[in-house]
Length: 324
Image 1 (cartoon, rainbow, N blue to C red):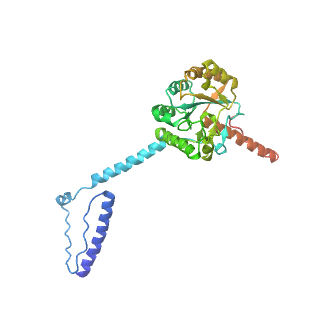
Image 2: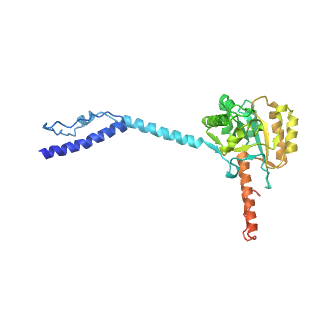
Image 3: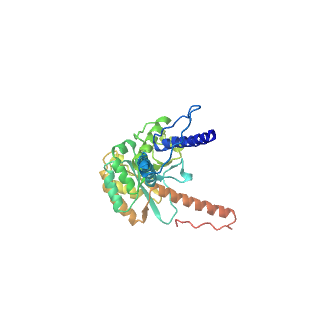
């Protein structure tokens, strides 16, 4: 009999352990009994299979289903966020580098339109013009403007444009490294929170490279995007002057600086359709800055391969330039 009691107690120990684990996983409280005192006879419970008795057992299935549904919903949310996230990265050769233009050697002429200081109400008519012409541009956002106009920002991303970081407060004066880190980092965090976008593109306010912002961005392996054509909107030119500035200065691989935020830009809005129409007549294709960087990277790879082949005596046939 003592052997039987010992076996029953061992079995009950495993049940107790299983019950404890179940209560942890399922959130169900299961009573756990202490071993019987020495000398007390253990009564083995009689197990029956009656439907009525089984029905009296507390149901745990609804709780399990609720937890499973919660877990499934959490996974679905994570997957949705991943699917909606966009990363504007740059080729390795441009990480931590400053560039003004990316002169193209391809037969196809390309140009990148960029807009600073948004999102802003003037962003909306700019988006309409770009959409009508099936053009993608690059927008450099100021954090505090993004905080004020999140819906406009979502529209920019939804329509397929590239995004860059333009600091939180658009300060011109020199700052120390912690301030630069906070200005750029806070803007990056808000861009991701509102739109799901991560970007490696940065443009310093006013184009000042000695203010501390560009140096910190370079340490983070961001590409510091300057420009080759400035439309001089800060001097309040007419729309005709803006058009003339762009058309007189344009070249393949050029980067055009315009503004959609931080002030009144109706002249830019009026000039934009004329700029696009004339550049199309001249055979230009409009690309985003990430696309322009990728194109330039391919051209440099082809040039390096051709140079290597020439050094080897011309025995290795250089690859065909995919851009030609």
